[in-house]
Length: 210
Image (cartoon, rainbow, N blue to C red):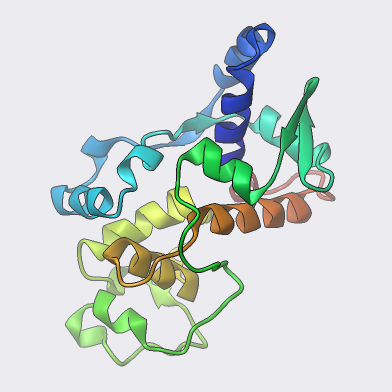
């Protein structure tokens, strides 16, 4: 999903590619973010975290453009058509209009504190084994719904029914308890997607969601 923001920013500055880009976007698929799909308290949390504008940019993605990004990626840049597009944390920051502040966190990093207890139903607190994952239904609201948004728009793993520790860390970011450098997070996630799909003939849909 992130690649569409980057490409769109670049393409809209080059008049000759607007029609070409529009043709690709005509076949865009999920995910799309619509405020009316979510509960009031969920939206309020996202407003407080400064994430509504970012999420409203999601309006589907083009698998064709994503595959060009993957196939043509070299160190710190890629190519779509004749366009050379930077693939860096700084360029993602400009494309997404998200601040370059906070901790450099990504999916592979873990933390020791039992931060998940705040987000779980009262009868589930203290029952979670960090060696396993957290069932979606264990979350209290609005954090259960916010977890779904994280799965769909942040972590690109919408098909899963279990939460991992990095989901909890992103919930902490929305709560305001921890600040994550989101351009860094998305950059690391994008590079991971490129590396994991490049050598696959038929990547899973979730892998190209970025």
